[in-house]
Image 1 (cartoon, rainbow, N blue to C red):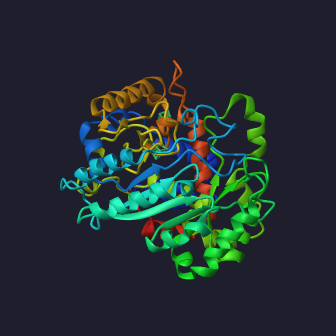
Image 2 (cartoon, rainbow, N blue to C red; image 1 turned 120 degrees about the vertical axis):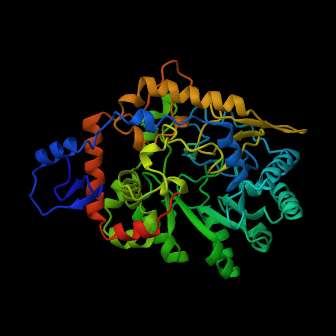
Image 3 (spheres, rainbow, N blue to C red; image 1 turned 30 degrees about the vertical axis):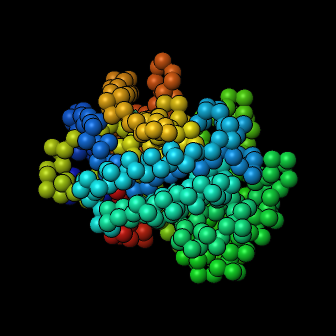
Length: 463
Ligand code: SF4
Ligand code: SF4
């Protein structure tokens, strides 16, 4: 169903507000069809982009973030961990392995050469060097060595900034080093003591008291650093709520927290019931919250519903450009890569503790490994990646995308599909009526959050 208050103006190609009841729902749907809103015929041409070697080279030369999986080892055993029993196949079996220092140094040298090829288009040449785990602080010697090494090779084209995600248990011990090197720190915290009951030690004992003691230490002893460089991330599940977690962190540390959901891909068949018992949808939870407006205003663009509105505007209006060149080209002449998958390495480069090179940490290494690091060298198989990616695009196009009403607005990452199966299945596939329903949901969200519309247009950039 299309919202009562909006319609699509074919001349301006914007959604515009309609006086109430001017068009009834049926007429609006007819109207959208008459202006070819659901037009499919040009999509094949528009989405005929092919993945090339230049895409990979360009991404490497403009790398924004290199993430090292310092160690698979962790001092917690959270009950919803992406590497735990709820999931299958993710990044193969965990063996408590640590990334060899020489692998990381080889990769830094490799990326440094790319950054120095004059292909880097950024103004400040900033690159984040991030540490991830397991718990990265369990291997502080590795982190210290990398920081030293990066500081010896940094140059006008390699402007590093350090970052890490941590469960906070070792913060007190290592905060002097982290503050000295201007780390940006993302702390995982699910709210108050009850809310954190899934964050436990391997022996099952709750870790909340020690976690808070460590965070409090930084808060009281490094106040400027805490204010500028510490952020929080909260996983929403059936032991907390957006409201409880948000208020706890806001009241105690005067900070907002980013919100995440449990990852719904790769769930272990035997654990499906347990998983869905723990799972909670952030939007639904926030909608029921009494302090919705307070939280929404604090989180601003990080509020999930506003993120959706932002993507909606990005996808459906013609005032968003994917490439600078689109300002000058007639958009219909441009061709894009199909699906919603990022160009590998354009957002980040993830190095696993086993030396595999992946486009990010959120996907399984089983079907997304794009290169390997060894003691001697770094191998990225350009030709293999190109034929692999284009092969998946072709297979998906023939079986799904050519019929999908979301094809030119697709947000589906191919690495979240079950690529190992003989027949590909796309969870994101939308037929016409489903597509209309989604548009209606987006319009309702836009209606609800209309005060953010101008702000989104002015302030949100997609890269
Ligand atoms: S999930 Fe997919 S689209 Fe998103 S950053 Fe990772 S590889 Fe790219
Ligand atoms: S949602 Fe799936 S079927 Fe639709 S365009 Fe994207 S990848 Fe293709």
